[in-house]
Each structure stands twice: as structure tokens, then as C-alpha cells.
Amino acid sequence: NLLTALLDGLSHSAPKLIFYGEYGTGKTHALHHCQYVLYNNPLWKGRVHCVRVDWSGFTRRTRFSDLYRETMRAIGQDLVAKLIRMHFAASPPTKLEGDLAEMLHTDQDLNRVLDAMHNGAGFWTGSRTELFAYAWRWLTCLSVTQSQRNRLNVAATLLEEASPTRLVKLLRLWGRLLRIYEDKRLIILFDEAEQADVLRRNSDASNSFTSAIRGLYDREQSDIGVLLAFFGDTLHENGLVRPDTDSRIDHGRQVFAFGPLSTDWLVLPQKLR
Image (cartoon, rainbow, N blue to C red):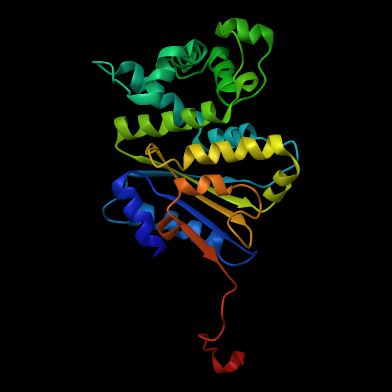
């Protein structure tokens, strides 16, 4: 059922699955196997790009911007720079549609940062400039000094205005560009969200993550695939997925509960009995 949902989701737009269950019930193994299937399925071999991100280290101060930063590092500056180069070089310019087109049209700081990454990437010289490093810091939601901000010519840092909606759109942007220019699907595997129950103790932290999850699992979101594995006896136990998010999720096809494995089917070799 899981593999059918994975490949069906890939065929229609992008797979968006949720795994939950107790410790040691196979969630991480399932994520690894999904990645193996995506990379080796005859129809999709060479047409997916998977990145794995650990959600370990949750505290009451953790926000989605922290997870976004780790996701950007997993995607990598090389791929991001390559996608920006292809987008700038496209002739005629590729027109993005919907909210991503609106974001690029209205977000002047983002456009300046993308331009800085493109100009500082050193595609011809082979060495990247300081400007590229400043742009990458901005894009990964790290602090940027005033002098670095002046070099980038931006009014504010992404860290200062890191709404979950904006960050999800940025992740979707790389998925959209990867699909346009390389005919590949970006699939993000989020694992080890075992400490996420601390989110329930901080409403700001909880709101940050649940807002992002609503955006990632929106039925109209087809730019990136998302596979999320977390600890919990129930879907709503740790606060990552709230009941008001349920309308965006097809429970029969997207949600998989992992329980303790039965040993009834095991037939041990005689020497191990």
C-alpha cells in the first residue's frame, strides 16, 4: 500500500506521505526503502532527487526556520546555484505561474539575493565570491551583518521575515525549477522527529511547524514531494499535525501508522531457537 501510494503520488504530482508510530517500528527503514524505490524504479530512475533531513534536536525555541535551514543545506548550494544559473540563462525566460510567480515579482530582496548568487557563483572563473557566500547565508536563514546586507542591497534578512509560508514557497521554488530544467522531482524525507512533542509546550513553535505542514501537504502543492516520519501513538499526538490540517490529507492513501511487529510469522533457524 505504501509503495503504491508513493508511486501514484509521483505519477500525479508529488508524493506526500506521513509515517507515525512508536520507537523502533520501522519508520526510518520505510523512508530508506522509499528512497531506494524512487532511485531504482524503471519509470523514475534518474528523474528524482531525494534529500534526507533529520528533525532531531527539537527544543521549545525550535521554529520551522531551523528545519528550513537544514533542508537548504541538504539540497546544497551547488544545486541551488545551478538552478539559478539555468533560470537566468533561459531564453525566452521561463514563466513561473501562480504564487511562485507572484513571489518573484514582488519580493525585491529575494530577487537581489538570487542575482547575487548568480553573479558570484564563479561559473566561468571556478571560484565563488564573498557576495555568493553572503547570498547563501541570507537564503539559508542565517544572520547577515549590516555590511553584508548593504553588499546584497537588501532591506531585511530572510531570518527577520521568516514566515513559514514564505519558507515553504522557497522550498517549492527549487522543486519547480528542478522539474522545469532537469525533469526531476524534488523529494524531501523528514526523519527523526522524535522530540517534536516539545512543540506542544510552546504555541509559537507549534504554530510555526503546523503552518508549514499545511503548506507542504496542501492538495494543490505539486512542486515537492514530502515524506514525514515522526513518533506518536496517534497522528495528532505530538502537535505536528493538527486536526485542522486533516482536510488537506487523504488518510486512506497518505497516512501510515507503524505498530509493533508481530513475531508470529517468524520461523527461526533451528540453531537460533
